[in-house]
Image (cartoon, rainbow, N blue to C red; front, side, top):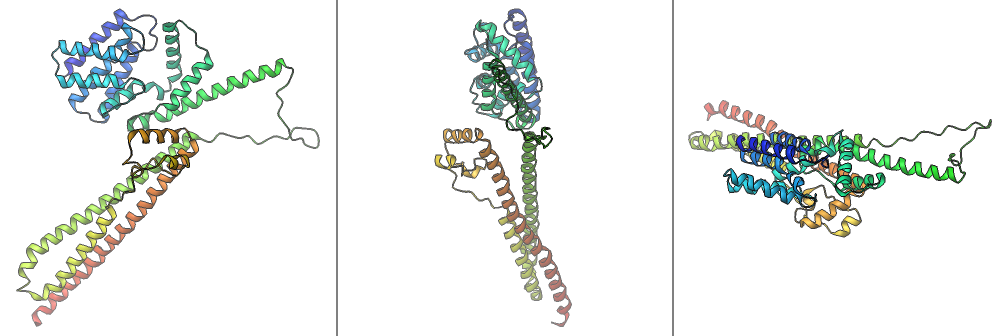
Length: 412
């Protein structure tokens, strides 16, 4: 398996070293190595099977080779074709050829991965969006585009296009969402701030040319003529808010998993007790009729405990779809699968983009999702508590009944 990966590394490195031009300031061998490392990391995180890991690593090495033989347009197709030729030359299996080709083509914009390994390479290819070095990477990409096109790009235009791209982009894997999304958000905010600063700078220059000053409007003056200091307004800690939501959601999911685990314990323990009672006690009840009532009490306790434990874990689904009117009026919560599991992908994709473009709607949806998770958790733990109480007190009553029956047996 490692042989084809090593051969891919040697071949691709040789191609970039021999054919790489001065125009490829970003899509070069260094970028390819970064993508390979990101793929390796995520592949290990998800414990990807060996065959899929091999396809991922090979695809990562070959995914940008197409830049060496033409313009950026359709470079994925050229990269996939060269990777297939390489693999056929080394007698690779048809399954491996298909996986590698699909992985490379999944990186085409807009990205549309169809499997976990395709999601991994898509996120790895745009790993730099969520790195502190993003600003340097985007400068290199801008210079590369300028050299290839032969045209200079205005700073404002480049920032606007980059801001738009970051807002539209979303990572696919949980790994990238956890490790990269927070930094990507910071990078986006930094770009937006720079763009706003540039616009303000232009406005100030216009004011100076027209002879106007940029004094603050309607300042409040003290009686002695000194400016009243205005309270400083700070931006909301957006990263702190997102971290809070993430922690709350994770805590709720952990508590839900604990509840299900506790319910499974109750179901398993009481099922074992019932099976023992049915196989052992029932055979001897004819000889020991004084144990009938204690046995029935014990069975009633076990069955009741199981019923409430099952109720605590029983899933409950909603209608599974929403209308466009629900989105426009901000009534649908798209973060809960029960609200969209019957929807078509195109409709859900439209709805989720509408939500992502509306910060208030997004935060409201997250808040609702956490609230209803809490409501479900409250019901789970309430039923689970009843189940545990029945088992605890019922078991005591059943044992007392067995002891009483044993004590009165000689008098029968």
